[in-house]
Image 1 (tube, rainbow over the protein chains, first blue to last red):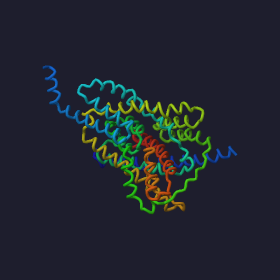
Image 2 (cartoon, rainbow over the protein chains, first blue to last red):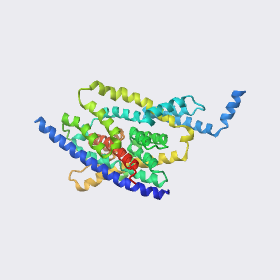
Image 3 (cartoon, rainbow over the protein chains, first blue to last red):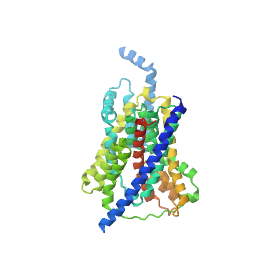
Image 4 (spheres, one colour):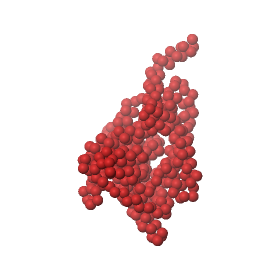
Length: 44
Length: 372
């Protein structure tokens, strides 16, 4: 396979990978915010 | 005479001169480790191991090959166990105080995916391109794990590139940061409001992150799991002696073996190739684009945010902990000696550790999964 053909295979991985990484990060951020809120509620 | 004949035969063999070159390379790694104090924990064993395996008919090669089979090739044991120690060393409090810093950790993994495309364009098959790209994770265990699982033929070059660039972060990052930012942006003040993070959050965080990342990227469960297990040992408060052991004895023990075991793959006929130079070049691209990605996200967020972010902290999203955080903090002080960016940059830096593991897992899932 030529470099261009290999690049065509790699480009979707870049797209999906970056979207996924931001999506997972967003979920973790929301989880941490919830954990902080929940933990503060319990300690009160 | 037999001995002289053997010696003549050895010296006239081209491989011998490649092996001599590997002695020089090993010597350079040792010099960088001792004189320049560049990642000595890895570069010194790698340098010495490179000399050991490149002595003609070396008896050490068999022993180191066996260590490699058991510790790395088999089930990637050494990098995973090292991750327990690394997890025990990390304090996620600066991140948990301001969780949106994680976005910069995510953005700073862009270099991995960019380099994946560039390496593919250079003609590397997907598994090798992905293994080369993971140098951009700026994390030794993640790079070893991904490259081994994908069966890359370039593990030694990848390791040398990854650990060398991690040590060179104070040289690589500042020019890129200055190129991407204005003086006014570098002088942006960021106040640190040190909110106390509840202990329950610190205990639940590693457990929940493992579950979330594991559901999205099952191939990353070992990496994220071992990292977070180490962190849980640290944060639970009832295993102080185990935490201490993990941070010091365990981490040091595995590091000793890891460096010298990686060197078992630095045999002259495998290492001295044009590919090695190309891989070292691509690794640099990964680090540069990582830095660019983190800084650019911060600049983008400043367009929409009332409270301005110093874009330099985006560069700390690269997983080279804690060097990258210190570089950003130092650059902040150079611009304004009252601007203390350390707690923000540490928060971003530890988020980069998590993000680099997520990126590694996603790379494995997407490449191995045969999605494309």
